[in-house]
Structure formats: C-alpha cells, structure tokens
Image (cartoon, rainbow, N blue to C red; front, side, top):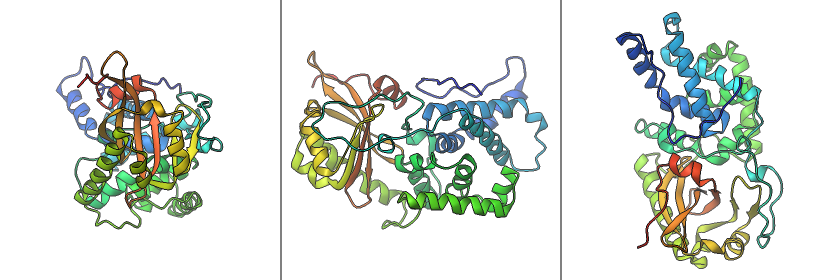
Length: 352
C-alpha cells in the first residue's frame, strides 16, 4: 500500500456518499463514533500520528464501502478492529520501524553543538494529542491504562515487536479483549494468542517496561493523576521559564535524558541535561510555555523570545516522569509547523 503522509491540523472527516440518501449519512455517522478509539489503536500499532490518521481513514472508508456485506456475526466494533488491524499490517509491511534518538546510538557530550543527523519523518516516533486517542470518560482504571499505553517509551517499545505480537499485546493488555476475541479477529487459535502475548511481554520486560496499568501508588482515579501531574508540570514550567537550574536539578531524575527529534542527538544524565541547557541550549533562557497534554504525559509548547518582539514557536516538549515527582525524559519535537497546528497552539505569543 502506498502511504501518503497527511500533514493536516485535524483528521479528515469520514467519507460520505455524494448521491446516496439518509442511509449513507447514517452509516457514516455510525462509523464516525469509533474514530477516536481506532486512532489510538492505529497510533500504538504504527507510532506515527499522521500515519494513524491515514490508517483510520482507510479503515472507515473500507467499512463504509462494504457495510452492506457486514453480516453481524461479530459486533460492529470487532469488525472495525479487524479492518483496522489489516490496514496496519499493510502499512507495517512497507515501512521501516519508527525510532527515538535513544534507540539509534549512544548519547553525546552536552557541550557539543552538533545535533546529529536528521531523521526522515517516517523514521521517528511522533507525538499525539491525548484528546485524539483517549476517551474523555470511562472507568478510571481503563483511562489510566490508556494513558500509560500511549507514553512515548511504551509506544517506542511496541515498534520492536512483530506486527502480530504488537496487535495481540494492545488488544489484550490495553483494550482488555479476551484471548478468544483476539483469536477470532486474527483468525488464529487461543493458544497462539497466548504464546504471542507471552513473547511480547518478555520483550517489553527486557526493555525495562512494565505492562500498562501495572503497579502504581495512586488509587487509579483520574483526579489523583490529574492533581499529581498538574503539580509537577507547574513546578517544572516555573523553574524552566525562570531558567533556574537549581530548581530544575531538584526535579530531574539522575538518569534523565534530553532529545530533540528529528535530530538523532541526545544527552543522558541529570548533570548532562543541565550542561546542555546552559551550553548549546542556552537560547531557551527567557522562553514562555503553554501547557497541554500529549502521549498521556505532561507537555507544553515552548516559545523562544523573538528579537523583533514577542515569542516565536520553538518546540513541542513532552515530559516523561517516574511517578514520584521526578522528570525522566524531555523530548522536544522541533517541527513547529507540523505540531503546533496539530495541538492547537498559537503561531506566536505577543509581547507582554
């Protein structure tokens, strides 16, 4: 399948017939209800936000065209996931694995000005807005699992799994499908599904990742997570906008990493992150930030001071944390022409 990346601010609408009557419109509206959850599924499978949009659009188009052949032997949701899985398998069969800079080589010294090679857009893991892939409401435990399963580290690890193991893991661990349901979707046996799940878990375990919804010190309620997240984000943004290195040191994990896709460079360790911020990254001093949510994580749009006045877009930063109030990763996506419209961020901030 030929893939054309759509660099648009929002996903296209579900296709509607131009000559059909109300029945076609009703089918389109019915299918549209599944866009958000299908986007989340395809994003976890593919690792690209725009590629996931394309896959969902193709899924809904195929379903719309063949809806009259849907016999109801399974639920509409299961039928759509079967189509989406096949679409994702088609994409994965013709694309290279998406990566993060940390998966491409070792860290570099913080004082080096060289940012490394530039990865092609189809090679690096992309950020995604929470609202595009996560339900707005539901069981708090399921919401927490959904959030954890779109974190950058987890999605990056998924890309190292074979396609069928990836689908099994997401369907079983994230979406909570039974082994029998997954076996029916993949036209295989329950034993095969269980075997694939064990292998996928082993791979994630070898990368130091726990299953989504695993051990947590919080009660799982959305309010608990929101309170902790908000406090940490406020502390970090306050320190960053003041460019207070002592305050930032207190918030960073000793093994924190900093990276800036699409460049391959990354630095490792709290002291190296601070050295980079006061060295090659010193131009970030005086930045202003607009908080948002991305990849189930704390995030913000960063604007650097513009010599002509106001502040200009610099990057979309996603923060990773260890759940105890320490930042373990700072990933700043620098393609502002792509990500700022996607996340609804203004194209500049005016002078105060």
